[in-house]
Image (tube, rainbow, N blue to C red):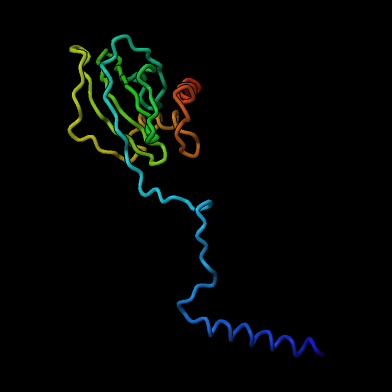
Length: 177
């Protein structure tokens, strides 16, 4: 019988407490503890970069791109880098079956699923022309070569490789199917 009297009294006490607290009060007391505070990093920003010298004696590592059998794709392992900004940067070489060659210096931001071309190469003059529209573009299924390269470099959950050794190992391990 006491239980029947205790339940309504408890409900009244909880309701009264909520009513007295008011609509603007917080249900908890904020804690200012620097040990557990997380710094607000804000939006991602690209760090500084330098276009490398045009590859003199490159170490080309090939990778397969489906639906592009008329072309061969290569990365110069000597120019492969991972910046503090988590961008994988590299020199890309694309060679057609007729021998035409395109060389570019690019970057992939794995977490953002984005690609950027910094400069385009002149294989005959062995020099770079910086891109006038070097903006980050979202990876898409229409650009199978860059999508494949990002899949090779980035982990399954789109994380940046921890270092160049891991990035190169992932590229070399990628399937040629």
